[in-house]
Length: 470
Image 1 (cartoon, rainbow, N blue to C red):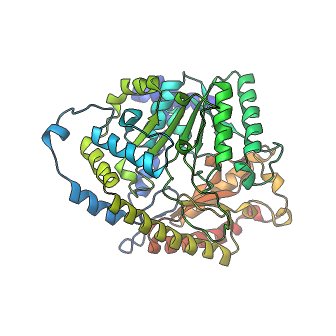
Image 2 (spheres, rainbow, N blue to C red):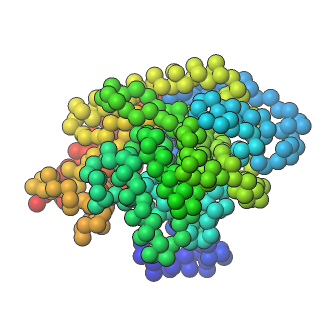
Image 3 (cartoon, rainbow, N blue to C red):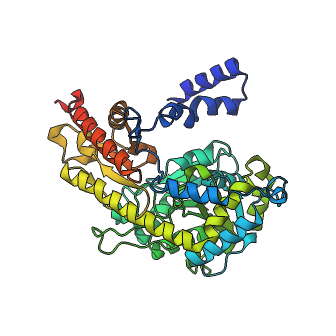
């Protein structure tokens, strides 16, 4: 939508609903969840065969029952702890102590994380929003390597009016394939170039934000690349924010004989390249604990200014202490947690093998991964005429026909939705070429098989679309 029509839509909302300018703009252009509500309220199940199979959202539902049973067994309401203001909106002392111990041990932190280093938020989106509000003035930028998790746009923009500044790699020396996105030298050159361009465009850059493990690529950054990120931020006095929400969703993949394991930024010594008060680690309950609806996250930082700034607005995003104690109980019960993580990982491997075997059987290309809840698949061939299938250069986002290829990508996702399976079109992750899609594989096996069958049916329909005919 062009700026003029955006203004028209916002003006209509102001007149009709008596909204503020920012409220009208968000209503008209940034309400992501409202349009999804109807579909998400009708998920597929054996008892609801006409429901939608949701392979678009990064949600692990493989152990929902186990989490539900654990929470129900822990549900005790303590009036002084849970029915008063207690310790306030920064987070319960119990959860902060449990989270500090969890980070120190499970993330192998070089220095012990303390409860005073942690700030509890209702979900990681809230954590990113709070950090962006604390470090950015309106219009300031946060660098994020491309492709990037699409939620970063909403988390930084919708309230703080900070902006995502994508870091492109096309044309960077040493870059030729997705594997190169994890190379330290390629990243060093890409970051410096993106920062220069942002400065030339009049954007004040405040931070670098990464997802490790990477979303949507499902890979982990090697320590040398993490060090380059830290050194870059140190050179330019930028905040380095590491979103590590998939840290415990790493699994074995024999197709990757030497995969990069997950290493937290907390485990590495960056003291010689960056001020430790500029390093912040984010984590949440949603992904690793199969609990997207639990809505709890935290920011680990030594920066007292950020803690104080987030505290000043925390009354607006105060997580219930009852729910905080439920997650604290999971973190405290190491035997339960270790058994849970082992079972979850085993089920993830089984599902990953199911979906990748399906892709290979039907000639669908994909990127091998060993982390996260999703697979990055390659459907570029469906966007091109048969005579041009080998020439993927047409699909670059800088192509003169970029709008057409983006529309073809969206049409593919729409056909899938019509056939009862939701997948994520790649363009929402700001890649540098069209034709990639993200598919979640961590749903129940029945839903996964049904979703894959509907997906295959949809691809046949896409192939029959008129734009495939020369």
